[in-house]
Image (cartoon, rainbow, N blue to C red; front, top):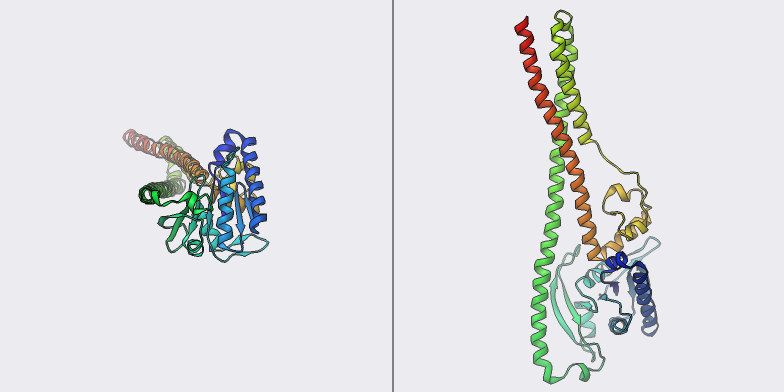
Length: 361
C-alpha cells in the first residue's frame, strides 16, 4: 500500500508548520491502524508512506479505516493505492514492480480515494462490506502492460447501510458517468500534459544542438581565417604597410567572433551547494544536473523518489526545469547573435578596406 498527501508541496509553501503537522497526523493514524491489521511501514518518502501487509483484505480494510479517520478534523487529504506483488529490499532501498505499481496506482486517485489494482480486487471481491467501481485500464509509467484499476467507494463495512437495492440503479448510472468522466480526464488531460512536456524537452534539446553546431562552425571558420592571416598576409605587410589596416580589422573581427562563439558553446555548471531540504522546499530544481551533482547520492535518490510520488510537485519541478533550460538557451542564442553580427559587419568592413588599399596602391 502506498499513501501520500495530496498537494503537500503547495501546503509546504503556504504553511510549513501546518503541513508538517498534517503529515505527522497522517503517520500517527497509519501506525495506529497498522497495529489492528498487522501491517508494517517499509519506508517513508516525505509525505508518502510505503506499507506491507500479509493479505489484500487487511490492506483494503486498513486503507478504508485510515481514510475514514483522516476525514475527521484536522482532515488530511490523502490518496491510497494498493497492489499485490513481490518486493526486494536491502540496505540501499526497496524495489520491485509491486512498489512501482502501487505508487503509480495511487496517483490516479483524488483526496479521500483508495485505488486498487485488479489483483487486489480479485482477492476481495467475494468479501462482503466492500463496494468498488471500475476505473478502467490505465497505462502506468514504466509498466509494460496496462493495469485495470478499481476505486473503493464503500466507507462502511456493512453493505446494508451503504448499498441498498433502491439506489442500485442510480449508483450504476453515477458510476458509469464518473467512469466516463475519469477516462476523459485521464485519457486526454494527462496525455496532453505528458505530450506537452515531451515536446518542450525535445525542442529544447534540438535548439541547444543547433546552437552548439552554429558555435562550432563559427569557431572553425574564425580559427582558419586567423591561421591564414598569421601565415600568409603577415609577410606581405612588410612590403606594403597599408595592408595593416584591413588585416587588423579582419583579425579583430575574427578574434571577437571567436570569443563570443566559445562563450556560447562553453558548458555552465553552478557551484551552489544543494541539500535535500532545499529540494523539498522547492528552492532548488533536482532535475537540473547543475544542482543535483552537489547532492549526496542517497539524498538525491530520496528526493527523486519523493518527487515521483507527488504529481503536482513533479509537474511544478518540470515546469521550472523547462524555464531554466529556456534561460540557458536564450543566453546561447544571444551570444551567437553577437558573434554572427560581429563577423558579418567586420567581414564587410575588411573587404571595403582591402579594396581601398588596392585603389591607393
